[in-house]
Length: 393
Image (cartoon, rainbow, N blue to C red; front, side, top):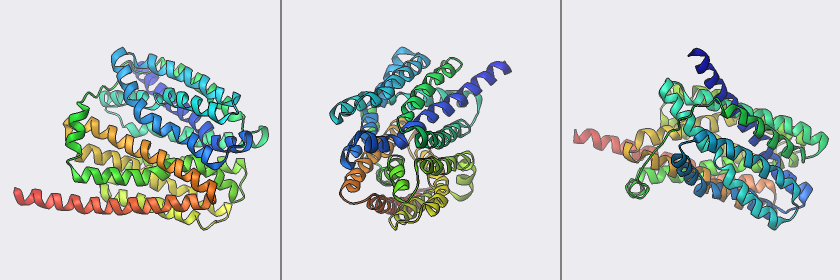
């Protein structure tokens, strides 16, 4: 039994390590490839890079239904890994903006299955075994960080085309870990329409969604534009890899201890602190610091991303009714990871095209400060609600 447990646990950790390794080898340098090798402008790059978060909004619920209907999450995951690997490599074969647009829509749809399907398997497993989700998810952060560092080094020597070989080959190896993953998945059934109707009547949850839109948007868009920023400040492709290694790598320890931190300091103070760190960081980048200074600031990503994501998920868990929690999680993901990421990636590309990358980060900073204000408003709303509850008792 222990052997089976160890195989399952190691397979889950290995999957997250390699799956996010593949993502880290491709996406941070994909925009650089489009600019240097294909010759696209900032608006075209922003449009292509913003496809994934938009498609994700519609694709992820569909993949959930496919998984529920088939009751074979491992088969769905293995199939999507194989197709994603093939489509990812196909990007290298095209140099037409229009054809790339169509290919990335299809690629984004298939790729959208990887995280939600694997997360559903993991959530079911940690609940049954009384484990912590963060202890497995942190391997994703480690894999992403290591991948960007290696990809940057290799791209510096062999050219940015190497990212496609890394992405596809690692995803194929990742399939081997799927065989020893649990067969069950976490099925969250809910009446979407009734759930949304109930949630939109909760003013505090609507404020929370606006806050996540404003804070998460720049965080996810940064993954696409940080490579350009590093090069503008004097860094090389290897420097891009090192910067991502420090930034993404700093998330892992914070994710591991986020639960204890939130328990000690409180959910709302942690969200305010993380939003402040993000806002200050993006705004600081507008003032064109040197590459060594930028490199030194990357580790603060652990404070912002590593704390805000667990705190935001904790907010959904604590402050939404249990009967609509699945819908709340779906809306939270769609607004923050989907709409916010799309908006900031697309508009950030237009700003990059018309001005400079430094103005793109000023835009990120302004949005994040707006997110901080929304979190402060949300905190005050929660305090008022608690006072009303105490008075009614």
